[in-house]
Length: 348
Ligand code: HEM
Figure (tube, rainbow, N blue to C red):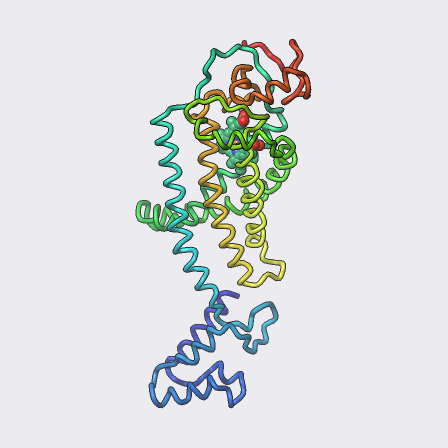
């Protein structure tokens, strides 16, 4: 279809350039002001076919015997607006946002180092994440990283990689990135829904989350900030990054991936802008999450890898949750942990 439209456009362009006639105007009445303007123009400014192109760019439906949505629209001009938004502000600000966030995190790490425990670990481990929770997290997290990396190649590759690796390699890489992106997306969508259902309860806001926010800068200098199973920073990441932005990514991505629901080009262009903007925002935020989940906070990665944390870690990072667990007001994870229970293990 695209090829056919292009061929039609090319034929029309040739026809119009030769001044052979106002092709589109012929589809309207002979009194069509555009047709008249074109006729006058042919006399006063031979070769200048602006009225024809104005008509083409108006997006009006012309006659076509081809069935299907928008087949009578020769050139859909909003496509040019979409191209300018994509290759202009989205690429420029989005690219710099990701780079600046990475630099800020590197600066925090080198200036302050990882957040460490104040007291010695006790050696007694508390279950923090069940196996099902860890699977849900890792399927979503790994598919997100694959989508993020391939998406960055699709958006920035021609500016950043092409000049370095050349056309042949970049053609292979971008085709691979596109296919990986398309096939991993459904896995991310399903795991995202499972993850949200599993984690929503412990991310509901509580009054103490506001106090946490007010004292948040102290987090990086190792200040003790009591919180529930998840602190206010993690809850923000859950609601903004996982629920709002990731769901926006999934919905806009589905509109782009399955163009078989009668969506018109404008809908797909709008979906594409939503997709790119939410992608760069959530990728930048995910760098902060991945930093804190690996080298930024001692002991955090083990929680998601093995599902357990030291009691001292729980007390210093999530005191209210720790108290609930110790007080037996909850069942694990985040639950009652009587001494000797299976989820309260001695460190080997
Ligand atoms: C691939 C690299 C990633 C690493 C190393 C990582 C690491 C971690 C760790 C260690 C935790 C546990 C934190 C704690 O015990 O409080 C965690 C929790 C979590 N992760 Fe990740 N993660 C990664 C990717 C992602 C991605 C891509 C997402 C979202 C799309 C995500 C969303 C979450 C959420 C929502 C939580 C629980 C916090 C909450 O529900 O408030 N993670 N992650």
